[in-house]
Length: 126
Image (cartoon, rainbow, N blue to C red; front, side, top):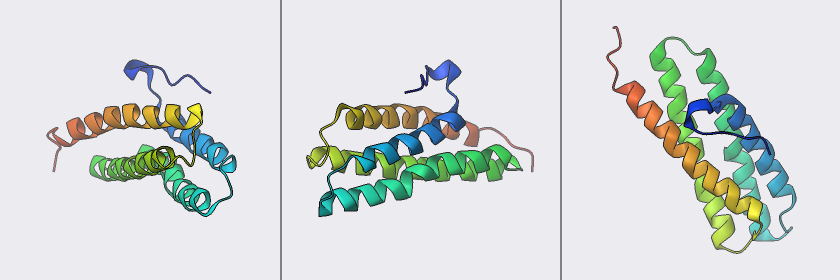
């Protein structure tokens, strides 16, 4: 796993891509049960959107368009967190990787939420 570091050196774009890769690996190891396939499908749907919207935000102009993309990042983070919680709490996955990824999504999600809220509160030229 790549070191995502603390708040001072957090590369959100790289981390978003890493989450998608880790989710793909996690889902590949899930049991081929109905629950495993359902939860895995939802994770495959929402987790890659974190990095995809990060990438779009990086190239967005004006600032409001960038912030709107970051709102989509936060939505994808919330959905990914939700499905990881369901995965763990249902007992579908008991791996340490699942719990580690959930904790990381919560931590980085809180950091990104704070950054986006702070950016929205800035006075922007009309």
